[in-house]
Length: 333
Length: 117
Figure 1 (cartoon, rainbow over the protein chains, first blue to last red):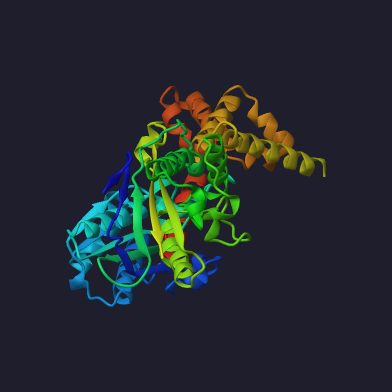
Figure 2: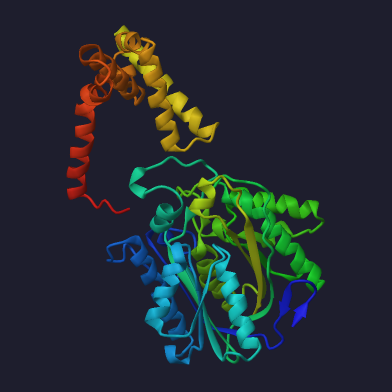
C-alpha cells in the first residue's frame, strides 16, 4: 500500500527467512568479520578474472541464503539481482546458474535495498511466495570498471572509498521466522552538480537525505522509533555531510543510532580511505551484521538507506555531474 | 655533493608540480603525465631543459618531462641533418632506448606476473 508520496507499507510484513553475506580477504580482516557466513582468503576465488570471481561470490551468497531459508532453488519464484559491472553480468550470470525467473536491477550501490524493496513488494502483493534479492561488488572489478586498471597504481585522495569485495543475499517469504520488512521508501534521483568520481560520499549524501526526509514525512514517524538508521556507503566524508544536512532540514536523528555501513564494515587501521563502498557494502552489512544483531535481540527496528551513484565511466569522461539515488527499507524483528 | 642536493631539489620540485596538477587542478594521472611531457618539450625547444639537466643531473633527466625534451632534441637534430623529414624520423631516435625498454620489460613482467587486473 502506498503511503504519502513515495513509501510502500507492506501490510503482510514479508519475512526475511534466510540471508547470507560472503566476503573477501579484506572483509575478513574487517570489523564485521564474525557476521559473515563465508570469508575467502583469495580475491580471485580460483577464477582467472575479477569478474568471474564476483559472479562466484554472488552465486555463493544466493546458495547460502536459500539453504539457510530451508528452501531449494526451485522454491524461489523470482530473483532480483544487481551489481556494478557493465550490463550487470554478475547478476545475470548468477541468474543463469540459479535458473530462476530473473529481474535485473541497476541502481549502483542502492541496488541492495532496491532489490529487497521489490522482493518484498512481490511477496506482499502475493505475486510471489518466495523472492530472492542479491547484490555483489568486487574491489578489483570495480576499480577496473570505474577508475584505473589495478596494476596502474593510480593515487587516490583521502576522501576516496574502498569497494567491498563480496555479496549479500536475502530470501523474502510470505511466512516463516525472521526479521520482517515493513516499509520501503523509493528515492528520487538527486544531483547537486558534483563531478569528482572519487568523492562519491559527498555526491550521494543529498540523495540519502532526500529519501530519509521522505520516509519520515510519508510515514509520519520520528527517527527515534528506530534502534538504528544506517546509510549504505557514504563513508566518513559523506556521512558527516548527510548528518549536517539532516540537521539543517530539521530532522534530528540521535547520533548514537545514525551510522553508515561503509564506516562499520572495516576497522579504523585498514587503509580504506573514507570507508567502504559498493553494492556489497550495504548488502553484506545488512544481511550479515544487522540481521545477526536483530536475531541476537540487540536491535528491534532498523532503517537501511542504500545509496547509489548513477554515473558511468562514459558520463564521467564527458564531464557530466554525478546523479545519485537512495532507497530506504525498514526492517523489524 | 652539490649536484646530489640539486638533483634532489629539482627532481622533487618537478614531482611536486605533478602532485599539484593532480590534487589542486584535478588532472587525471594520464593528463598530468602528458602535461609534464609537453612542458619538457617546450622547455627543450626553447633550449632551457639541457642546462637544467647539466645543473641538476638525474633530478631533471629522470622525471617524465625529460622525455619531452628528448623527443624535441631528436627531432631538431635529425632535421638539421636530413631536412624537414628528419622531424618525423628523429623524434624516436634518442628516445628509442626508453621506448624499447618499456616494451621489453613490460612484456617480460607480463610473463611472470598476472597482467589482468
